[in-house]
Length: 111
Image (tube, rainbow, N blue to C red; front, side, top):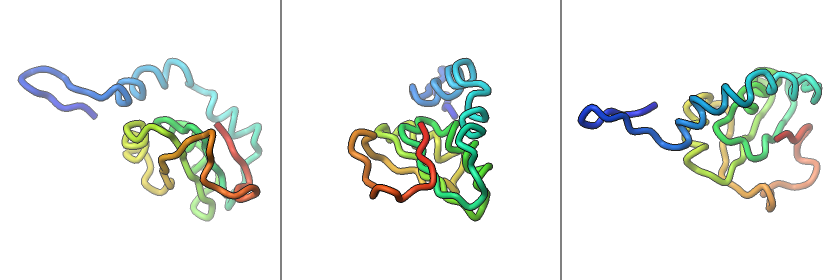
């Protein structure tokens, strides 16, 4: 995650967010969101403003290898951290206010 330079730890804000804030703020909620969405194997799901990918990774487990998950975030550094977690998810940079997808393209859209 981080690199050492002359005894100093260097990490991006996205790495710090993922390591410390995500567990403290979001522990347990991803499974609840996925439960409420009633996701099924094979579904196609979009995670809008996916950040470092905590929800998208949970969703990928639910839809399985026959499903498809796309994680969309405006911040490419957050997506870099997300890509390290699951390279089977299609991580895309984009704006939540101007989605680059057609209506009805997904079985579920989460955030």
